[in-house]
Amino acid sequence: MQKRLKKAAIVVGIVAGALILIAVVVGVLNALVADGKWNLGWNDYRYDESGYEIGEGSIPSETITRIELDWIDGEVEIISCQDTFISISESAENELPESAKVRWKVGTDGTLSIKYRKSSWFFGVGSGNRNKKLILRIPASYFEQLTAIDVDVESANVVVYDIFATDFEFESSSGSLGVKDCVFLRFSADTVSGKLLADGLTSNTVEAESVSGSVDMKFPVSPNGLDISTTSGKVTLRLPSDASFVMDWETVSGSLAYDLPLTQTGNRYTCGGGANAFDIETVSGDLTLITEE
Image (cartoon, rainbow, N blue to C red; front, side, top):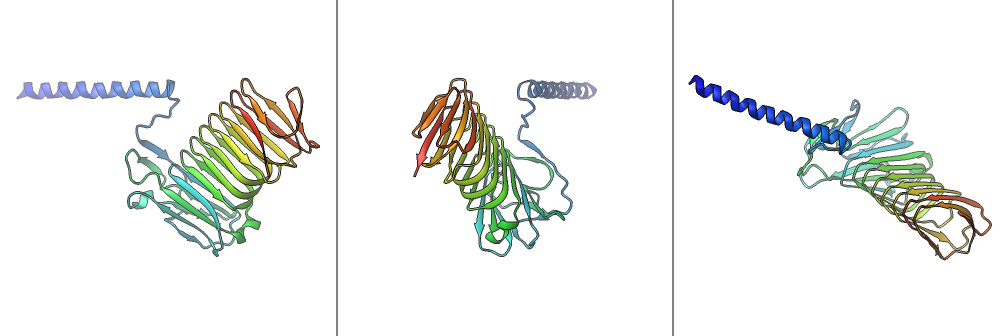
């Protein structure tokens, strides 16, 4: 009996030692190779959740002046409406437990904060509680008081329709952004591999940065300031026929194609009277300028 227990203890010790060794190796590789991004399906989603409401619905507040949206994956739609209040709705493949439902809070400073789920560690691989779709409806009556919309996602794809605000900021790892018929005083978008698409974007200042994702933007009116940077992502700008700008373009191996009347002096290109300032930088990404009637 004692021999059996001894053998069992040895086996358990060997297995435990092997698991510890594997964990150490994975941890070292995660730090050295994956830059800490391997989570083996576990996600650490933490924030101070005090004061947050749980679940979708109408948000009965007329004092909201700023929206901060933090989402992980799935889809996000931000659309205008004629409702009385801002509202949020979400859907997923399976019925959502309370821990996986959206959270929201309106702060004393007028900031509406929206979170993907409860603050916690959670397991996501193969879960029907992931890849949620969120619809954020903003009444047009809020546009004049809406100073900023700040969207931070990991892999979620975001579309924004017919929204007016002072500032719009978007940041993602692999999520793409699509903007349609929006007006922002300042527009800023930053992604690693997602696409940045805009159709009918009116903005005084536009900033866009991507590593490998493409940037494709159509402007009914040329922005006063345009700053775009990519590594390998292709840049396409669709401009009105009366566009007027001075563009500084720097690239290592990217090519330039255009159908606008440009005058070149070194890396500087002038169109019309040169009223607006464009600054575009790529490593290998191509740049295309297209006239849109």
